[in-house]
Length: 357
Image (cartoon, rainbow, N blue to C red; front, side):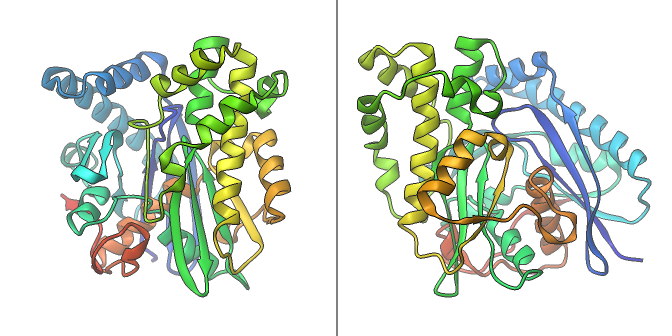
């Protein structure tokens, strides 16, 4: 009987906890997938913890609530899946601080408590173990993307449009990846604050606004976009304070602001692709931003790449990230080192993650 692995993922939008059940031997497939919605009170609690991350009481209280939610969701998931042969769970945590230059990565969700409650091994602290070897701690999904590409005739480039965008590609036969900058995160912040909507569905709000070219050029002058890989970023750099700096300076109304931020994502991703020497012209869009047609069409127009809409073994834009952590858990349980350290900047091959029992 093949071993099964569970992978979890909760992105910066905090919309849901995604859980995948995967087999990576024979057969290779996604056996079961489900998303568990994160309700507003829990979102508020997590965001409060991000804002007061040095407050130990707030952190401990939030960590306990998050751990209970994850444990409850996992128990329901395992029961619904009907799977009996689960080897381990891959759990990246919910990130509240990521500062690779200071080797600091803080997440919510206690892997030891989850392991005890589910009576299964939990592999966690992937970022921290990479950072201990001098890496950025991210991106980590590209190692899984390489695995998927082995099921195709040629390498597929991946652009994950989550809260932040990351690009995976092959250049002269060498696996490369990095965070290109913000994807949905800034757009979602504006959608919630100025439109009382969780996100801009299909980019419809952005299409009603006029792009402020001056603000856009100023945004694109941020030093991050000119840094060479390996590099990763997050809400510590790109956040509401960053947005308001441009909104106030250029006196943008809410429609112009969301249109400009949407174009920022499209151009920063396209520029990253065009400045990279890609071996293949095939690209797969993952993450929630893959449903934003305004962004997707603009990227395809600017890069000339051909979109791949399906992946082998049942992987898709919904389950791709959670499945990646199921695969990383399998690698760690079987003591398989990750050798391509240049993606994150790690100094050498390393086993990613710590096993909690």
